[in-house]
Length: 204
Image (cartoon, rainbow, N blue to C red; front, top):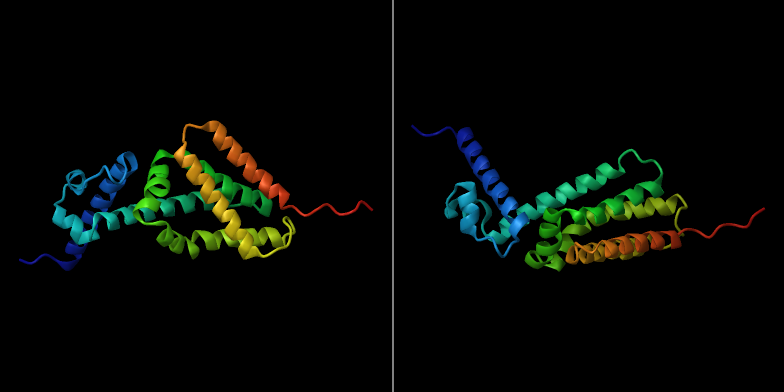
């Protein structure tokens, strides 16, 4: 007797989820290069044929894991900003949460170490343009509209600040045990933001 279509769909979804979960756990700990597809299949309890049927390639499977982590990071950042009415404090919570997330070894491995290498910087930038960068630019624009930073080209400033934060995150990822470096980068970005404040007006 043929199986019901709904049951088949559930089984496929469960198999896909098992492969994705196994790959995520292995990539987080060992990194992309050190994880063969055979290890992923063994951890998920599936055949290699099932892995390639669902994801096409090891790289595509990594991209799915990367996207899961990206969504988790965005949710963490949004949660840190939720309920903060003051735009300055809200923006501070956003960038500090992003840089603090580099202390998570799994996030560091998937997003900062393996992501640019496996996916490529150009594709990653293209993926960010309409998501993370668009969100970031809205926050920078809100600061400007509130008069908390000097008026200038919002897009250009957003590109520069976004790039500075990414570079700081990569630096922290490269030297995770260097707490002095971490504090220097946090302090330097705070100083950069303070330098963007409008000059105080004349005292009446």
